[in-house]
Amino acid sequence: MTENCPDNRPVGVFDSGLGGLTAIRSLLRILPEEDLIYFGDTARVPYGNRAPETILQYARQDVRFLRSFRLKAIVIACGTISTTSLDTLQAENPDLPFVGVVEPACRRAAAVTKRKRVGIIATRASIRSGAYESALRRIDPEITVFGEPCPLFVPLVENGRFRPGDIVIETVAREYLAPLLQNDIDALILGCTHYPLLQEVIADICGPSVELVSAGEESAYELKRLLKARRMRGDPEHAGETRFYVSDRTEDFENTASIFLREDLRHAARRVDIEQY
Image (tube, rainbow, N blue to C red; front, side):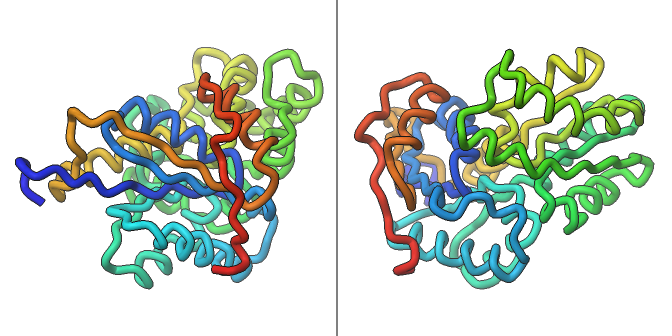
């Protein structure tokens, strides 16, 4: 594509459930001209406690569904898949660029930390993979990394427990964050795209001395850089549209998505039998 010939093919975005909506919200702000197709695997959430081979199997099905559309790129709006399966998915789909959440978030965290003490909260699979830690140390070997798996965050978010004042999520968050704060971190990577839904809760606990880095938001900026570099940006005069697909009940997804994206998304999502892919 040339600068005078916009590429109006859509961008695919997928996650294990609701978490990818944090990437969608950022994409709508940063790339408003782009059409988006979102798939949330709500029938099989969470991915983070599953074996790597199961995660890869699910991710392949998610990608096969998205490839039923004529896409120009895919955003893996899932920390678990980004840390365990991104390289394999890219190798299996060499004609389609993928953007994950790990490298962009790590670059941002390395840029904002002053004491070079960075915390990471993510799913068990992401922490176990060591991907965030490896990426940070490639960027700056002097950074000390502290990781903390937070297995209860995703199911709590999926059940609507993400608002400040909710005693359940606040209690769980304080327990997870305590060891990181004891290690005097000054930057915290929200390494699962569900976690920015908890941003207010996490920010209240961490205080103003800890800079929060949203993996979903940084992946949106990374996609913008990629599309510009490859001359694949959409028509700037075009108002992008987003289509939503899920693998379980649409109503629950639509209710939470409406709250988070601040628009009425009732009857906006379609259910997909992901096992067919």
